[in-house]
Image (cartoon, rainbow, N blue to C red; front, side, top):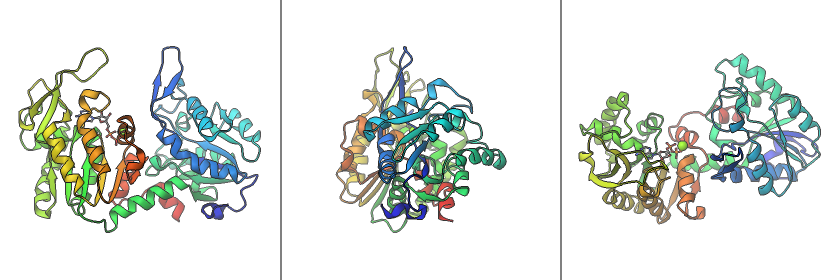
Length: 405
Ligand code: ADP
Ligand code: MG
C-alpha cells in the first residue's frame, strides 16, 4: 500500500469517503440523456479511487456537479458521471440516488472490499454550501456517518469551506489524495522562487474573480499577458471604447491601480493590440462574422470575442522565451472555431517553452483538449481554476489547511 494513506491505517474493509471533483461539462439531449463533453476531471480522479479500491477499501465517492440551488435537479444528477467513472476504472460503480438518505445508506451497506460507489450530487443539500457552521456541520455529521475515514482529492473545491471539503475532515481520520498532493506540489513551485522569466497569461470570463491574482503577481511575475474577457476592463480603464464587450465597470479603478503599480514594480502588463469582434455573441443560429480591429477602435455595437492575430503572435513570443509560465483563462470564445485562434496560439506557445508550464482553470484545460493538444506537452494541467489562483495568490485554502492541522 502506498504511504500516502498510511495515516488511515489498514484500508481493507474500511469505508473511505473520497471527495473528488467530478464537476464536468455535460451536453443535455432532448430525450433526457446527457453526454460528458470533457471528462478530464473524471480521469484525474481515477488514480486515487483506484489506489484505494486496490487496497481493499470500500470507496464512497462524493462530488458536486454544477450549481444546483440546494435541492435535487435532474439535470445536475451525477449518474452519467458515475457511469463514465465505471468505464474508466474498468469496474462496476454503484450509484446512490441521494447523498445521505436511504439510498446512500443502502448502497454503502452493500459495498464489498474494493467496490466503488458514487453518491448523488452533494449540492442537492443546502447544508453543503451553507455559510452557517452549524448547518454545514450537521450535514457533515451525516456524511461522516457513512464512512470510517476521509480522503480529500477534489482539488477544484479545496478553496471552499464546504461540508464535504472542510467539515467532514474535522470529523474523520483523513488524508490527502494523489491529485490534491500533485496539484499543490506543482503550484507551490510557481510561488517559491520560479525560474525566470516568469510569465503569467490571464483570460477567461470570470474577470473580478481573477483580478485578485494580478494584485499578488505584480510582485512576482515578470510579465503579465491579458486576454479573454478580461481585456475590455483594461482597455476601458485606459479610456478606450469597448462596445458591447464583457466589461466590469466597478473594477475600472482597481484596474487603473494595477496599471500604475505595474509600471512602478517593473512588471510588464501586455495587452492585445488587435481584437476579433462580431456583432453578436456566437450561437448555433448564426454564422459568425469575425473581423479584426485595432484594440482602441472597437465599434460601439461590436463585441470583442478573441485577441487578434498580431496580439496572438506577440503573446506567443512573450511566452516562448519564458522559463516558467502559468496560464489561466482562454483568450477568446474558443468554443466557436472562429474565435479560437488566440487560445490556440497561446496553447501552442506553451508547448514550446523550455521550462515549467502550468495550465489552470476548467475551461482552459478543456480548451487545450478540444483544440487537439496532447496533454503531455504541458508541464501540468490543473483541474482547479479558482483553487489554483488562490494558491498563487498565497491564500490559505480551507480544504488544505484542515488536512495539515
Ligand atoms: P477558466 O475556467 O479556464 O478559469 P473562465 O471560466 O474564467 O476560464 O472563462 C472561460 C470562458 O471565457 C470560456 O467559456 C470563453 O468562451 C469565455 N471567454 C473568453 N474570452 C471571452 C470574451 N472576449 N468575451 C466573453 N467570453 C469570453
Ligand atoms: Mg471556467
